[in-house]
Image (cartoon, rainbow, N blue to C red; front, side):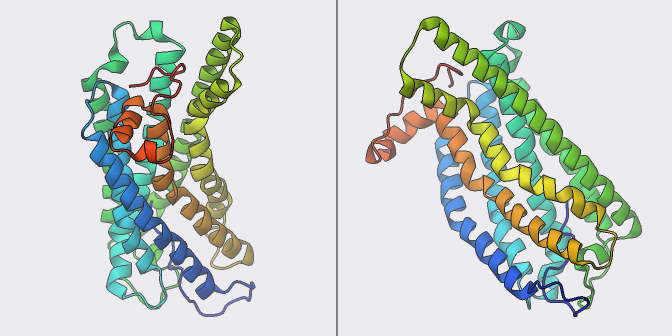
Amino acid sequence: MNALEYTGPSPAQEDCGIDKDVVTKILAGLFFLLCVPALVLNVTVLWILLRLRTESTFMVYLQNLVAADLLMTLVLPVRTASDLPGAPLGLRAFTCRYGSVLFYYCMYISIVLMGLISLDRFFKVVRPEVCGSRLHQSLLFGRVVSAATWVVLLATAVLPTIALTSREPSDTSLEFCMEMKTQAGRDFHQALNLAVNCLFWIVLVVIGFCYVCIGWKVMRSYRRSGSTNQERKRKTKVKVFIVLVVFLVCFAPYHIIRIPYTLLQVEKHSCIRESLRVAKEFTLWLSATNICLDPLIYFFLCRSFREKLSDLGILRRFSISPSGSDEESNDQ
């Protein structure tokens, strides 16, 4: 969960046809492009959610998700600036120890919360009888699970990474952040990469299973009712699979590239590794777009959120109805 290397210029070793300066500047431009819309969107979403009554675990998870997105948005400019050619040594060292760690921390908090949202929808729509105790609607339960997510990742990933990134930085190092780690830090880094990749694939299976089951349940109810409203069915399908789509678009490419890159990370230099590094950085940017796409989840799955937008006149400005169809979730 830390930056693996300094991505700026490096002495020529083997010409792989990759201009690192150009790649770095393109990536920096892409990351900076996310900052302003992400900040506007997440501040607006947080302002709205704080004015809605928190009546279920679903709302608790949404509040925590926007908090993670907002924190990542605030970290993003610092992390991006440190990767630019000529960035001050102190800024790069700060990013290695703290900035990148917080960036990945927020990313995996978002991944876990999207899994929890999917489980919440699954039990409410597909297996409501399992929740006779209303445990999944208990605010205490939602807050405890959310707090546990933050605390466990903080204790097992963030704090050890910061503590083990303790060496003095060297401006001549090609593997800038990795050289700041102790040997124990490098071993922990590899183990942590494996753990968070496993976490991603587990959550992906959970989300896929939940929304396939929800989709099947909703479509079966349509067939039983004999409904022929195709527009209503289309909107329902969008609402059913929006979490899965956002999850796949944002996070899957990065974690697919992460596997071969980690396997080749021990090599000092190779063209394949350099190509994978560039691919990893671009797919990491794709993961960061999650901070702009998550508002789609709030809009499609939370009726009270849409109603608040309607009260503000935003939906009417775009001729969007705040009600929509809530068959699959009867959302809050």
